[in-house]
Length: 154
Image 1 (spheres, helix red, strand yellow):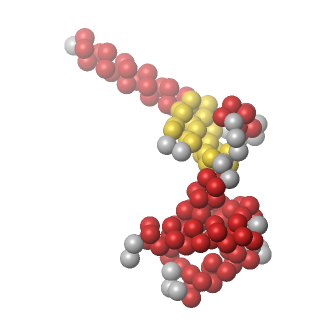
Image 2 (spheres, one colour):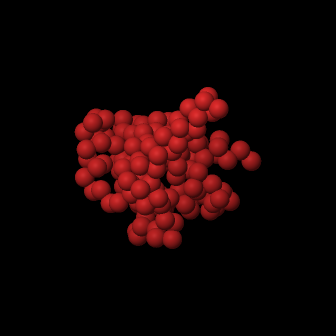
Image 3 (tube, rainbow, N blue to C red):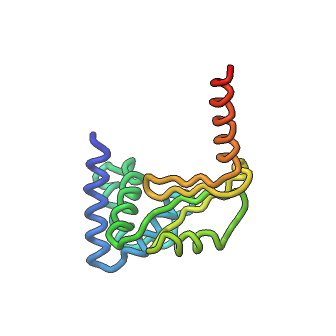
């Protein structure tokens, strides 16, 4: 079974259905919430999302749900010209996503994660690009540079 092909077909169908019914933003936000924490499913589910889950259950494709939702999120965000970004900070920084949005321009949906192990700063991933402005990342770059310079000396 080719899960990638199956999930992309269901995701495209869901996108077309939500565009037809005008429920794209609602399904998009509920899909993101489901992927973040499946145990806290939004109640009630959007009609189009509920129809998808019933269809998947009926066709024995329930195990593909996570892949379908991921594909739908990517398709929906690109269809409205938005970008998906993952932001990791050491401490909560509620104004940082707004500042980054202004710098990058356009609509950006953020998944924000708090990770004290980065010691400060932030790590931003947008598409295939990563900006590591964390203290941990800077210390690691300094360590690698130090090691490479000392290897040349010895």
